[in-house]
Image (cartoon, rainbow, N blue to C red; front, side):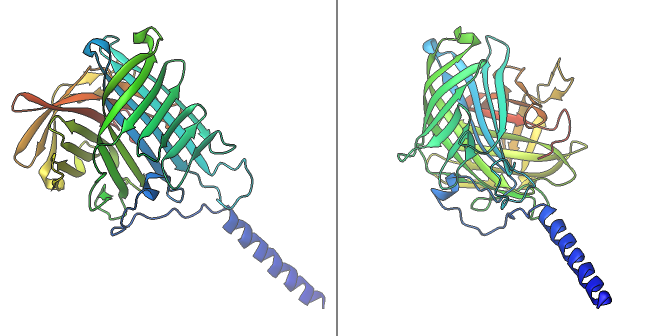
Length: 364
């Protein structure tokens, strides 16, 4: 009898130990798989089972007198390693991060801010079903009319902007499945909304802190994944351009730690909606003008020639210093700025260029 009782206790202890280990194990993140059809409006919203997600808005604004400004607003959602079944309202199962920036050549640098908070208590969230992301008094929400309302309030800058779609979403890659590396698992679900009409107000140091009425054009990227980067990847060069004729151009390359291209892709949609895809062998970023940050010492190719097949495009920065230090939120420092696009010596579009991994390898 004592031997049987001892065996029972050992069996129970082993069971409890295994159960505890299972409970402590990080949850499995949802995989990105080819062939999944994106569905709207549901895919405008959050996808909490995936590890990383962002809603990324960039664009050009004009104030009184036609003064050009670049702007960027990004909301990130990051799923932690805690069990989503944990009933505690304090469990950090989801983290919400916000970045906002303005590029004004009259100031010669970015004006930007950042913040982060764990989701909960109605103060920070990323809702499923449709776009609705909140971080204290920063918010981005898609209305029933399809328009996005973006509000940012901080000591450095403030926005109240309405973004109005003029075109259908542009599904990137293979109908929204976007490869980012040699392995099929290094991918994201990814769509863009180019040619968004913008109107609203901004306030920052260049406006004396007073609201400045603006209009313009923007680009929205929404992307979610669980293992987007190859282990050998250091970062990426990405651009999204609203063409003056109503078309849209997206291109990126993933760089390895030696600076060589691991993967690349581009898509060009004309004003009639016809899309031309460019595979990894048909996309090149040839560095042009370079700028070295006096703060980090990193050198960025802030100008470049983008080669798509037999076509050459030139990217030129609105201003050299558009470095964004987000070490208080995502932990990264990168260059993200307004650029013009030229072809055959003529400006044909405006958008943004993002250069990551030039200070340190990116970790998502």
